[in-house]
Length: 262
Image: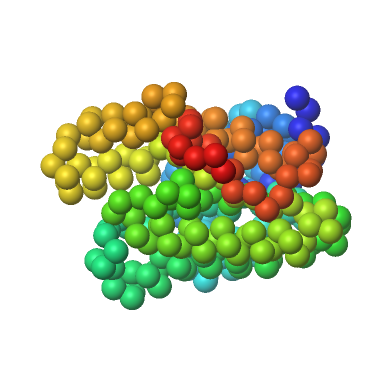
């Protein structure tokens, strides 16, 4: 399928690895110009080189989106590199695990800066331009935790839901201007973040890591973990011309792990 986004400029946050990198690859195959960012300069350069080898024009920006300075750096350098951003994929690392009453207010503030502030500030920076041009796509990578809170992930459970509420409201505001806003909720997907969560869960429960992974895989109707490229393909589709009537949605990509009708 031709997604109709060749020549568009796609800004993909946290694209040095995992699901966001897979999304960047999908955009590269569709002929998009890419802006990618990460706080890890070494991993970011490796990702830039791989994407450039596929023929994509790539601008790589080192920025920590957990900080106001990092957000400002990304906005300034992205605007200097291109006269517009057509597609914005919001994504950061996850906050530390922990049960509900284990996190002090400093941890809550830091998690809010990481997950919520980055989305609100980046949409404030780039969505007005999309509105003015009459076309734009925003997708945030959140988590299955929005639909089904996960044990020992109180910060992620709470703040990813806040991101979802913000973007659902924004979708109503900007839809008339040709801008769609959606979120993708990954289930258990084979990424470095999942490796870290497996270690934390194993230490907390006393289970071997292999058992933790097996339990996650068993939740899926497919009885396996997801692959980053499967998520990347869904993100690219949501940013496509054929998906132009899809907005305000929180789309599970979880292999059927969520046992619900809605």
